[in-house]
Figure 1: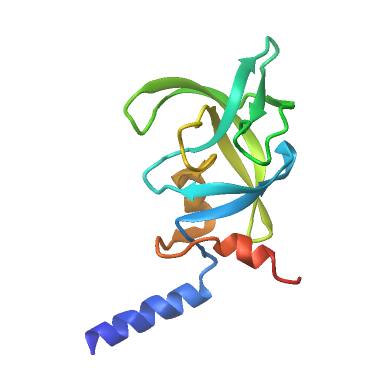
Figure 2: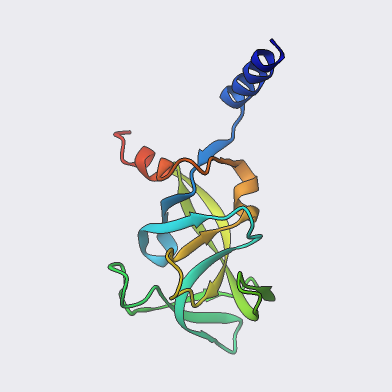
Length: 160
């Protein structure tokens, strides 16, 4: 009986909450970076989000120039993008290495809604997913179900 009541409370709470469910992987649009359906890993162990970039070059006026993705990705253009640096920080990567990274603010589209995300620019060439979504974005409106995938992407493919 207690399990039934607890399940009912959790189920009803989730129905009426504003939180959306993300699976362990998905595809998102980053419109200011001219990227559509970028494969992403949702990582509750990572504090910040990160985008795979090449040739990351700060400029003297507080901006950073970079090339998104690489030649192995179908969405690679080789074009430089210039964005204002939101901050510079030392980040410990998953292998324990500390790197100085440049962060930018940019919109991301999730479930057809636009959110602002802070991304660190990082060479993620050895990683399976070019985009990593961390807790700073997840805690805004989302819950994570690691048994699911492509929930936002599939929802965006439905007729409006």
